[in-house]
Length: 622
Image (cartoon, rainbow, N blue to C red):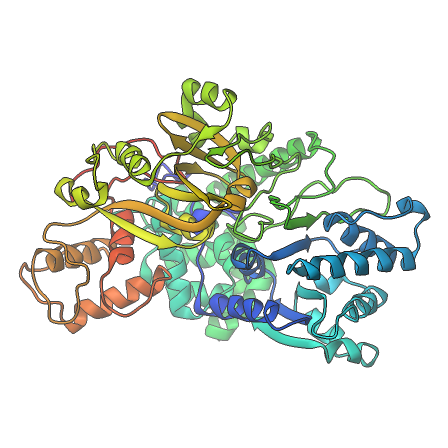
């Protein structure tokens, strides 16, 4: 409703998961490091807790993307299960075949089958990890059974690693005397706190920038301390508050959110819950919160518009619930045979409707970084011979509705997908095809060496699909099958599928199928400013320093353009470090390729986007 008014491409503070809006604060990175440490420590429990909306699922998704390739993963997002249901779910999601029918099996049958499977997996060199979200809902008997599962071990190590993710009540549960044995097996624990005040400001600015805010921000940076006080720094609360505040500014024909609008939004969104948080920062305001809420509700334009929005959401949710979502009991991770997602079964045996998600990384991912949420789900097909890539099976409704990526393929791409496996290319051929997305014909020999003459640079990196999501630009990816390696252009990606392009043909595959063949090596292109240097450090000057200063001024919405021929002085480096920190880059004040790419992206330089369908563009100069 307000996106056009503020010249935004989409609502920046939707609570729906969208990988483009991923913001990893220092606390999120620390939590991720604890999880990664835990799986390499040889067994036991790892505990991650945090308040509602703090970003636990965000961390979990990033973790799932970064686990080693030899890690087989099961994910349970609804753990309200009995002991027998838990064991059956583990068997299902690790694809363990039971010797008897599930209804006839007892606890011993499940344990024996799980133990045999874990031993065989250990012999192959695989590591098995069970991730349980919303673990505060586990009953004491189920927790005790989980502890007993960690007794399955060899003389060298335990066979099953268990990660518990939940709200703060989980810590209180594990402090009970009857669960002391389990608590002693927790080898790593981390409590994910809220964002700090500076991180809150960076979070808001990041989401607005991704949504397309380029000129004057509709939420001034000066409001960051107030937003932090009203929300406590909890990301989901920040989203709710800022979304309603933008709606309020739109209704009042204001070009930006004011403190008055922000406080009014807090009273509406958080109701009486806003008063204590407000009191922590301003006791006088807290004393008038109830009266202010009454006055606010009397404002006719706001109330009617907000009510209409909420009614529309309710109607849409009801319609969604009425649609069939497939027989799957939950959302499966894209499977290369290593990663699975447990959709917990309800007691009456009906299917769970959907998985939950806090942030953009999808409900579950395979061990190399694939996220495949979706009720009916896209299932990975078997890989053909080396040098080709098979198409995905029939895409789910969610994938078909993704719009931009599907439209970019066109009828020719659809026909090509149906024609059979995609023949992979050499690296140089794939690079030339990637150049076509930029509208630039790269030379046949040594394309990367010839790219600078066209104003482009190659960037080579390693990382999972998560890394490519952060870069948000098409890339060539190395796809392996044994000793053979081929290359394809990763032209588009959404939450379930990826579009590969080779020789003018396009083919859609599941992220799980892609991750099974992708070892993390990629090359992408980016636009370099005039007189670009690989690194710009303290005291440097020149056209590239002028370009950096101008982009930082634009992003920080400073009216006065910086004077030319200025050196990279300490004030400019402070701005650069703040920008890098807000974009989850190494905040060293040295401009490298990743910093240039983000400056391009946030300052309006037109470049192909991976998450927007990768249509070819002819971008304006840098």
